[in-house]
Length: 101
Image 1 (cartoon, rainbow, N blue to C red):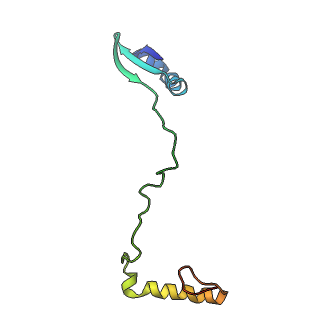
Image 2 (tube, rainbow, N blue to C red):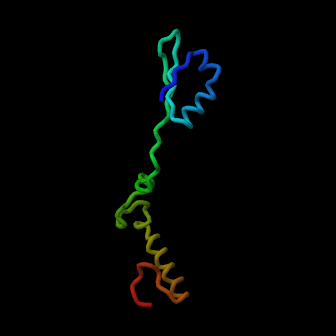
Image 3 (tube, helix red, strand yellow):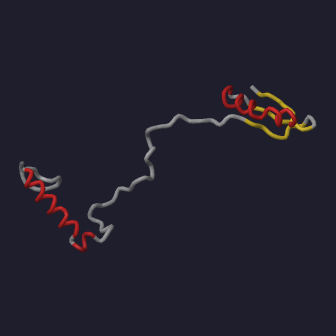
C-alpha cells in the first residue's frame, strides 16, 4: 500500500511515517509541489539461514603444508610427543597416536 505525503507533512511526521513503513510495510511517496521527489519503503529481510553462516571464517588446509614454520623447527613433533607423554601418564593415547588402549 502506498501513502503519499507532502514534504511539509513528511518533515512534521517523519517518525510516525517511519514506524508505518516498518510495522505495516507501507511505501511512502514524498511530494514537493505535487510532484513525487522521494520514496521511503521497507527493507526486504531474508530469514537467516544456518547454511553458509560461517562462510569465509576459516580455511581448510593441507596438514602437511608448513604454515607457521613449526614443521621446520620440529616444534610440532615436540608438541605431539609431549601430548603422547601426558596421555600415557593418564593411561590414554592422544588423538592420532599409534597403538591400542
